Length: 202
Image (tube, rainbow, N blue to C red; front, top):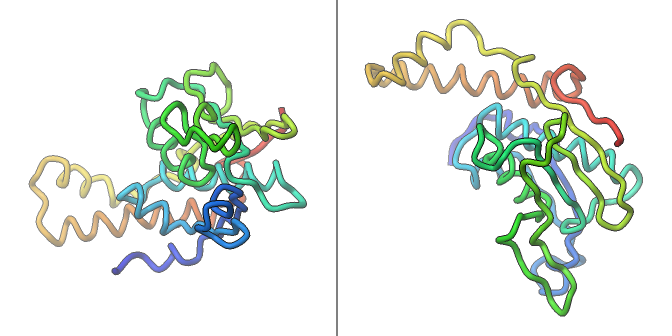
């Protein structure tokens, strides 16, 4: 499996998942997600997938500054309906990382470890998403603006060729390189850029 080298340089997300411990999947419930993990699940790497990953990383650091985040203990709300724009794509990535789902998730064991009803869309927020700890009720708003890191000008004519179906094999390869170059700038060079992504306590 070949993929861009920078995938390995993106900061990982470590959590503890009590359900996985009880069911014997991971000893102590300890698990770590990489950016490559979410790309595999999403089937692609783009500014939206990268943003969802960064949003989760930053939110969990803010909610759990001195302890390991608990998977299944986090509610997530979005301002848009699930069907609007890229809200559903972002929701899928965040669901993978946090365990939160709307109504389709695990119903729990004897009232514990439920994952459903932890994700809400069309919540009327001003932020890109709101993350809330179930146990403490503490919430943070996350703001993500991928336009802060625009694509290189050379990518635009290649995109037109790819979308029109007129691209040659070398055009498609070059387009992919330019596309991932932007994702790399988002995840590596600008991961701490407050104009790209910021977190504030509610």
